[in-house]
Image 1 (cartoon, rainbow, N blue to C red):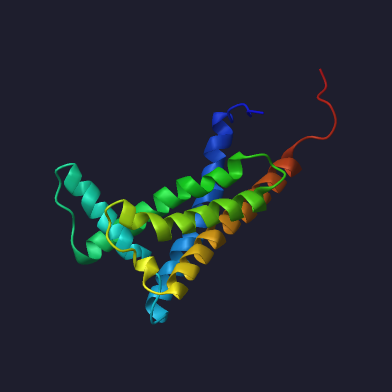
Image 2 (cartoon, one colour):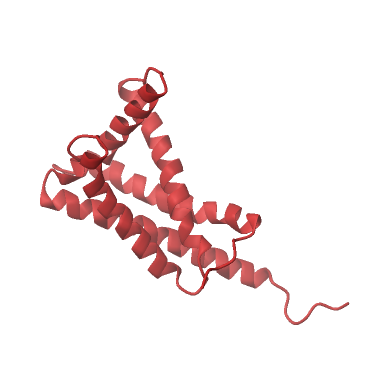
Length: 166
């Protein structure tokens, strides 16, 4: 059965949990990049993608630190929009939706880069980096699910009891 489209207010409120999942994912990636010997380098993939997109539209991409910052911002926005899908489904199973969406995003991050012309994926450097990539995207989906659950609990607490008078 096809669900009716979500009202605009609900779509706007879904951005919060999505941003929470994207922030968690970005923090884990950036922290691991500084600590692990062979971390998944999704930032490198993001920089390749951003450079390619800017050049496609006739622009000149930034370099080094500025490009890295722009990539982090683009990752937060794109992952935030993606993880906001967790909050748009039926309210009963946000954790299942978060886990499935995170797992699919992680698998996509491992498998798709060579097929999109972005070169060999830094997430494929070793088997452990592929596994970490999938795990971290799944974590981002679960964080978005947790934020969705808290959002639903808050909205139910604010809902009046009983039928409206009038």
